[in-house]
Structures are given as structure tokens and as C-alpha cells.
Image: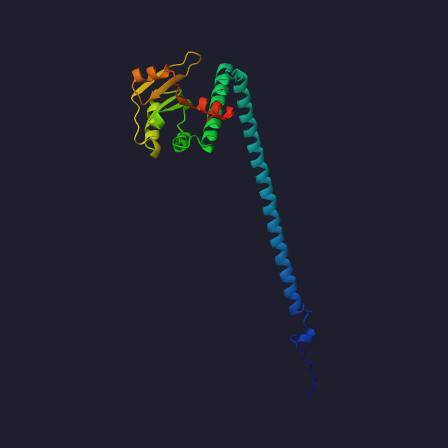
Length: 229
């Protein structure tokens, strides 16, 4: 009988295991790897977006160039725009007449016309009239404001009716009515001249030729400049 001494070794012990990375360091490495992957994906997305934006910009630029070329072709085919000098002069005359009438109206509304009666309210409401296409050139008051005559220009006879309706709706003119209306083509231009009078035609002509002239804006201005009442 022999006695053999046997020795056993447990290779599952930690001292026989290969070295391992610490758990904390392993987490750090994994986190760094995840961040690197995310950065790579983000960089790839930015590169793809840059290429797409570049391609889109090229398309928009090409379309813009094509539109500009079409516009240049249309401009080259059509003659240059020229203003009608007659219409320009007519507009200048109308603007000058309008400014002159507005100056007279503003002056009259700021001055006391008479100690016994005043047309301030009527003139003020007349200045508030704003019908596009109707230009008041002259106005006259007779019989202390009981009779009125208006003269001016228009580009459409229908607008004179709207002008009259708007004027007669104001408090200062609610008791007035125009019994004579005359609309005709002006001789010096293509506009239409109109004349409105609260008197009948015969009375209007008779008073116009009488020795005592009507109280008009021109006479009022002249009298104020000369210092006469």
C-alpha cells in the first residue's frame, strides 16, 4: 500500500482569474462610447442637412435667375412707360385749384365775416366735403346764406349727386335745396364743369348781372386785404 499525496487547485478562485476592469471605470468607458456614437450620428445628420440645404439653395437660386430672365425679356419686349404730359399738367392744375380752395376755406373759417350774421358753420361744413372725383372751384352765398351757388369740376356726373346728397345732409344745409343744376364739358380740358344753385335759373342770371355783386369768396378776400367791412 502506497501513500500518494495529492494536491488539488481551485482555478475558480479570484487569484487565478484574469485581471478585470473596475466597475466604475467600465461605466465611464461605456458612457464615453455612447457619447462618441451620438456625436457621430449628430455629425452625420448635420452633414446630410448641409448637403440638402445646399441643394435647396441651388434650386431657389436657379428659379430666381429664371424669373429675373423672364422679367427682363418682358421688359425688353414692351416699350418703356411714359407719362402723358397732358394728364400730368391736368393733375397739377387740379391740385393747384384744390390747394387754393382749401386755403380760402381755411382763411374764411378763421375770420369773422360779419357782426350780424356769419357763414363760418356753412363754410366749415363745405370744407369737410370729401367726395373723390369732385373739386369745388367757387362758392357764393346770397341773401345772408339763404341761397347758395357752387361751381367746380368732376370726372363723373353721378358723383355730383353724391356730393349734393352728402352736403344737404349736414346741419348747415338741411333747409336748402338746389333748384338749378348745370353739368357740361369744360372747354379747356376733358373734365366736366358743374354749377349748382338754390335759385331758379332766371333769378340767378338776373342777380349775377345786377349792380350789387354777390358775396363770394374772392370778394371777401379782397375786402379783408383792403380793410373794408
